[in-house]
Length: 539
Image 1: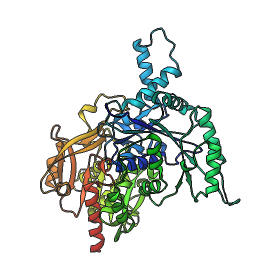
Image 2: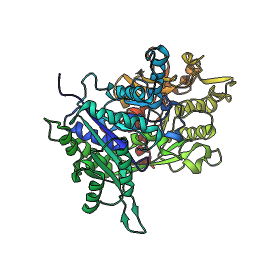
Image 3: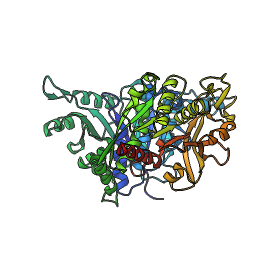
Image 4: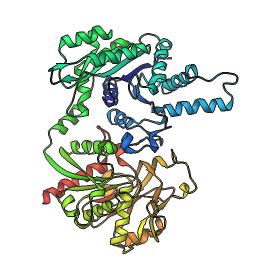
């Protein structure tokens, strides 16, 4: 048996949205670059079993893994930084923990015992903490605890962390606490008191942080660091400054400069690997920061007031743009604000148009107008999931002349259901985790733009949908110039639709954005951005 798996826990205090996920991903990247095998898991304190039924305004996008888990958007950061897939086991919620315990209780597994938060809930949390490390595959497991220390719902997680310190013993356990050092402009002073209070709350729960990562807009002078170290009971060299960065992809290098990885390696007594290999990462950053050209692409959707609702798409454009040394200026456009009278004014200056995924009929008219504008004016177009379905509806209405064409999701009584409910979805009444989820194979048609982009005939992509293209209409579509460029080999489900007589018009039923990473930008995004560059140069 090799060395035991080391566990790092990342907690947050003072305020939410400090960037625990980015710090976790950055530390993991640094450890990975030294040759250690690392994974990250997120424990969320809400009672939903998973974020699949949450409104994107509430929680940002729902990220889907290869094995079909609907997870927190932080798992997208983990994959984009580490270039390795996550799974069902990498995101656990309070809801799932309680569900597991109550299921066991109903089966009689606790027969005669009073089921309580301690030890039964905390034992279940600990079991899930350890789960990913059971096969010895990872040297280090980083666990991000969602929410803030002091939140009622986070308490069982923090208590489980306290217990685990004694289970694992020294050098196998580490707590990193992420906190805020606000700057009071009126007093021209950095304030450490919120951090002191946050650490005090953590100490009251029985957990002493080993390392403090301090989010700040200004550099932390040595005297401020000394004060934090003194009052929070940590070593001076374990007070890490985390300045606001131009891009999240700077954070691993900033954390390396602050020696976060060195502190972690020393405290966990990780041995055998010293040099970091971040050359590819630095090359990516070089291209990202020194573009030779730029394009303007419109992202048309209904959740644009919260950009996190489209997090993976936005990051995919960063990856693809950097690979082409092109700055992609994304314009987020609300589909509810587009109509036939203003579409030219809203979309006229764009080099490319993407119609985003989503559910329901709100903003439907605006999306159809956006697709029509792109098709008629030969503007490069990319439709994802619902975006592909809207492209099909628009083509059916305006090219095939099927004026009543619609999706049965929006209009159950349509006489031309060009998009309809998948066969296996019929009769399903429960909402959570019941869609077509996760990775499925797709066979590409030779000579199509998609086949050229991927450079191969068989691909696998991730899905999240209930409705599909109605194959009864396929022959008519293909006769008029919109072809199925990719199909699932088992079910015949249309995965990709392309308009042939167009510079670049591609709609995918799957979500390519889930598989784009820093070191492996997605080929469809690369080709779409290239088409936008070509259009701009022609103009």
